[in-house]
Amino acid sequence: MVGQGVLRECLVDGSVERVLAVGRRPTGMQDAKLREITLADFSEFRTAGAEVEGYDACFFCLGVTSVGKSEAEYRAVTYDLTMMVAETMVKRNPGMTFVYVTGQGTDSTERGRTMWARVKGQTENALLRMPFKAAYMFRPGYIQPLHGVKTRVKWVAAIYAMVGPVYPLLKAVFRGQILTTECVGKAMIAVAKNGAEKRVLEAKDINRICESVEKTP
Image (tube, rainbow, N blue to C red; front, side, top):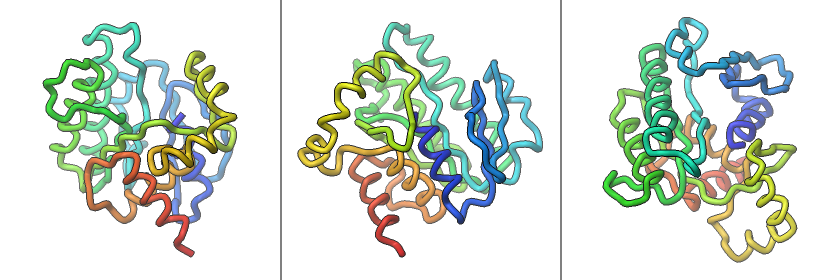
């Protein structure tokens, strides 16, 4: 869902010259500056060559829920797959900024009892040690989808269907904690272009960056 949002923002942002979308299925979007690579098996990414060279930023939005998964299963996607992509990209684009979408509540100590938070923390820390130009960890909480963006996870979609009518109230009550796919996308692009004071960005930080972009003429 976040990937759909940031892709849209990249396509409507005039300062973004070209976009390469890599995923397990076609995006269904058409744009002169968009190229796509579809990989049924994402492990094939390690063989990527010149196709992934020449980019200033990588927005890594791939992820899975930990519900019903063992730690080994969750780690295979959350840590192993992320690191494989990151290692490939830093070799091909050492001057790249890497933006990783993680989650609110991630455990940076790597020692907590919550499995998903611990694995996410391990992934964040490993990415921050890599020799990119810069790496930033985005930790959003609740994200409201906009502009036709939809989740493919049925039970998550059901939650959004119920929450949608009270979204304005939630935004007012939890100001700064509630994000949108548009806001996250704009903030990711802004961080890639201008950097940020923090390398780990919580929901309030993401909102603040988004608001500063929207105020800029």
